[in-house]
Image: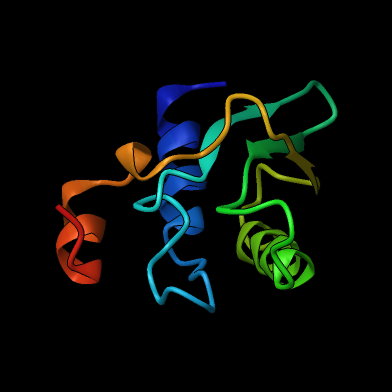
Length: 102
C-alpha cells in the first residue's frame, strides 16, 4: 500500500465518530493498523474502549461506509482485537483535551 493510500484511508477513518465519546476513532487511538490486499480489500485492525461496547456494530458500519467511497477499496473487513488492550495513553493530545483527560 502506498503512503498516499494509507493517508487517504486514515483520513476517511478520522470521520468515524465514537457515538458515546464524540471523538473520532483515530484520535481515540482505536485503530491499530490498516492494510489492503491484492484484491483491494481493506482490513482495518482496531480495538474498542471496552469489551462490552454496545455500539461496536454501529462503529463497524460507519467504518465500512467511510471507506466505500475510496476507489482503491473494493471491500472492507474490520478486525476487532483485544490485545494489546486499549488505554487512554493511546489517545491523541486533542482527544485528551476534548475529554478533559490529563
